[in-house]
Length: 209
Length: 290
Image 1 (cartoon, helix red, strand yellow):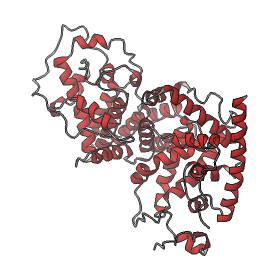
Image 2 (cartoon, chains in turn green, cyan):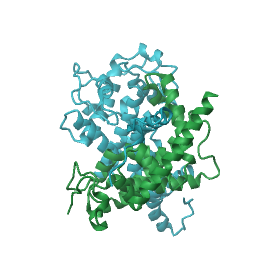
Image 3 (cartoon, each protein chain N blue to C red):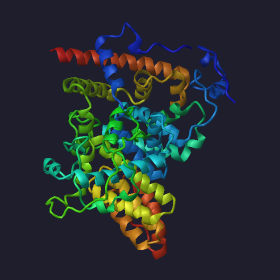
């Protein structure tokens, strides 16, 4: 049974009602997605989530496979309308595992824009599609800077900031994905924004020197 | 509680903050990566993601063909391409003589170039190939939506091709077939062909047509000895050996695979495939575990 939340009053719902509310009320679905549909719909979202959670592209590829292998085992348990929240929750756990396994290496190598040999073959193909190499370079540098700042956010703030500001998830989805009370999500987002803004300003000042 | 406005939507957000956030949102999963990931998941789970992706591309193009049929069609196109090259090849070969055979993705190729003929001419299923031009494959790929695998559904007919004739005098008659594959299509098309070939092998395996699957796998190996999806082909080969009941071969292949790739997602599947072979010999699993 699906209960549609009234706009703007989601957080005032009793918890049991909140858990029944679909996360995409604008386009409610009544049937569960197959595993193939999940991959078709959310593979790009999962990969971007993993990247923004601090994984290098090659690691994000492997982690993306791991996420969907997990989903393959459990996809019958995913509730209709909550796929994105579920997937992001898995992404957070998988990304944390990859980071732990990379403990001996820097979280982000300084040469993020320079790809390793195994990456080179695939990257060169996508690079060939970029209309402007200079623009691509600037974009890569900005992404590297963004990743460096996000990496310095405290662990408990990072997923909240990434999911809301970069992946455009709703507060409701984030609360479900991270299994946090709505108030905690809001306060973490606020703190993360302050830290991120301060770090971005500092980085900008350093560039101008 | 209402949703706070996002920083990028807030006019008060500092430009340097907005710039970084925009960069973070702009990065996307390329079709090449997506395909490679899908194939890896398919190998690990047995789900038909690669074929499903092809199916999505076909439906996006408005065709009614099923995914497996699409993969089969692409396979036939590859075969026919070899056939067409038998007739029209020759001088073009010199142009591609310097293409590094180990790097098909980066090879400078032409979308419409005829291809040389190698051993694949005798192996490819040309007898069942429809008369279509390979350029249709490249053309379809350039119009495909990002992230989709598209099999041409309105392939350009060509004149009925005469039976392939041997070219004993041509010095290039036995050029490596992977070079021929590189000349067939640009980088992404090469990967599409790899995906389609592996999807076809998987389909044949699921249909318990081991002999045909084995023949297709041999063709894949010949064309893509250093392909992007070689690891997935290795998994399929183990599955084929298991299907054939060749326990010793399963074990040997699985051991070799786990030696090479101990910590990839497909390793777990290979261990599962290897387990019955070990049980039959009464040995203990000593393969590396993640």
